[in-house]
Length: 263
Image (cartoon, rainbow, N blue to C red; front, side, top):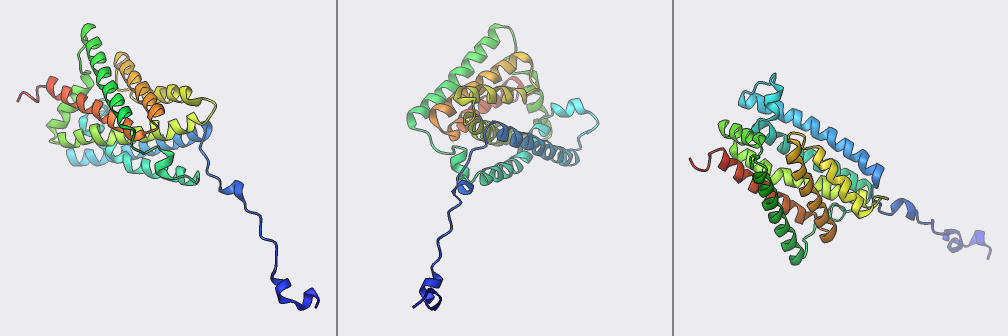
């Protein structure tokens, strides 16, 4: 029987070669991470503008007074809360295009108990060091901008929203962006671990331009500590907890020096 007469022979065909290169997971390295970072910045800016416009209508804020708006606690709160969902959506898209799992790419895993205690203790010690140094130099423990923000939020009856933004949404958003997404991409590039900690910390400090130079030094120290613990623990959940602890202390201190806790 010839092959033309045999249906068995006719149906046998060599299997297609797997396109393994197209299916392998990847990491957005330096330039890819930087490009996504610029997109994230644009998305955050647009979300913040929409949030500010909504807050201005709801709380009757004067949009023409730009300098006052930048320091208004309501503006700070809505900027953070409005950005969290769009930012997470963009990062989820970037991770999906990299053929990775969201949780794995961003290191959203629990740290070991030992490293969790080390990280949280280091955050407390850093806060004590910064406050002590600030007091010794004759500067106010809490920057004036924080007093203005917490006071204005209280004036508008939105202190709860301000606290939520400062202690919850801001730590989650900033840590997922900086110690999750940006650190992951930079550390996989030629920068390596140390370079990723340094560069991501510089960018983190640069976006906190509302503070003076002295306070920015403290922000930089906090960023380096968070980046170091991210590298040591392999956990962004730990840095979120450390960041939330720091911001919670700042909130209480701001309320105290604003005279709100003594009322």
